[in-house]
Image 1: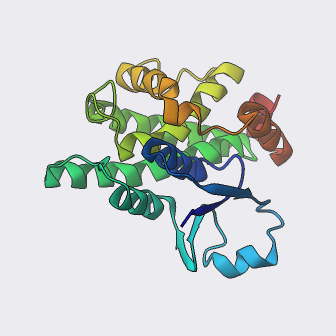
Image 2: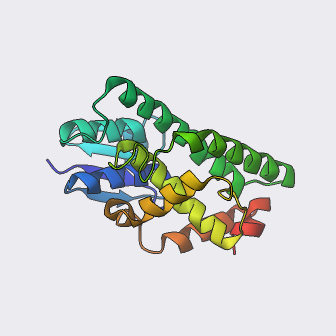
Length: 218
């Protein structure tokens, strides 16, 4: 049965799911909604009111990490390392990726200068913690994994933000910088981006009207 992915077009958590679907070669439908004014049927499907939601027949899955795990288990070969300890380590750092994505969101939507500065420092600190974990060229070395799918949307948006208003966040993080360049060339990552992702992302930041929009909103 063809899965149906429910999406907000620029959501990095949705993009994680699309990357794994692409990597696994799964045929799927995608339906975009506006989270500011979601349709009634979506509110009935999503217990959290968030995307992504993956519908398989009458069954509903939510939370991107859960969706990624489901897709990995049902469409072999696995994108997790075989070693149980390394697999657990990857899962832990996938959770850490979610914190980084939210820190990035707080940075671009910050209303006041102090909030912006705090978010930049928080993002920088977390990236510094991540740096020694990256084995390169992918997270674990040579093989693309679920951890790479989890971080790719963050690194794709970071590349856009650095182009619009350089922060130098990766200047002292060569492993992450090289990793990001590698991931953005990976076919399943490259093909996961919606048309005009950069433009839509920038307009979304501008619409927030906060301090962060001065730098990234164009």
